[in-house]
Image (cartoon, rainbow, N blue to C red):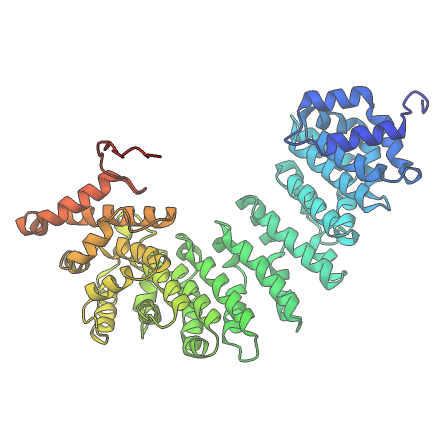
Length: 524
């Protein structure tokens, strides 16, 4: 048998190197051609004796990874499961990485996932994957985590990854309690990755109390690097749409508030905690699962430290403004920002029109745009009467305390600044113009409309698109305002906005006839 499948190592090295570095994705036909010349058993056999041939392992491993990622290659994996098991326990990190990738390919490229999961269970693959996660190098651990995530993506695989008995050696909570801080962070990263798969998988994580491991890791260590790593994982978790539902069942909000309010916490930890809390509360469905006390606790923590952050660390202040803006992106969050006493939104309004600090102003303008409803749709743009009165009052009071005197003056000054500030200003106006008082302010200043209608104001794509959307929002509000739209004195403004909308966002120009160029001939 060995003679039947023996290959020339030199030829295999050359062919594997070529295939591994071939540009583009590998086709099934290319994989078949390679395996017709070098049968898979022979390649595996050569890999097991690769120590005798320098460079062979480094060529064969990426070559096989590419082959197994094809449909044809993946179809061969079930016939070589014992070899996969050997690879998962190999001394070579390259071979272990290949084995983990092979498991992922088995699950992701299979025509019948149930059979693949059955093979994983039958051959006891999952404990070996966890071993790779625990004691492999970074690449092996990452490949192992991907394989576990692929397994948990199947309903049949959930029971393997989340055993019912907490006494199982493969239970992630048990594993986390027995390993080093580095490995615990890997396990926590795996939990967050699994959480993002679906709401049903997140439910299993919640029932297994695995989210509490994130909280416990922060509470039980004084190592700022470990805390920061866990906060980064919480930041990823906060991006998941169903995060609010399950985080609300833990005490993570209290933990984030304690970090924000802590006198001893490093500024970078406070900054991350604020942004994470903002992301969690920014979901439009957050108020369905998170009570107002959690919202107000976060707002109180940020509000109580805002002046300190403003005076001590500009980056932390920008993070606080970002967090407030994220909370304000939802209807419920924006309402609370304006109804707290005093309104937490006052910090955003003050900073939005402060030209002394560019980064802070930029963050505040985007935050105020969110509060004003630029990211919301339809009837969710405008808030309840009390919140709207507070928003109007904050902006008018800010204007009266500056040389601009009126909101229109403030908005004009924004549009006269650099491109980044202008783009944030477009977002702010797009949200604010749904209010009649803001519409009146805008059309009372012809300079504002001239800047907005000028197709040459912006040269970057995001700026062009934001300016165009702003024109559409103003014209939409203008057209629906019976008194203003019927006033002949505003016909010129309507015409400018219509023309700006018709020409589109991308430097559209009016048609012009080609002009001949007449030149005298050169004489020598």
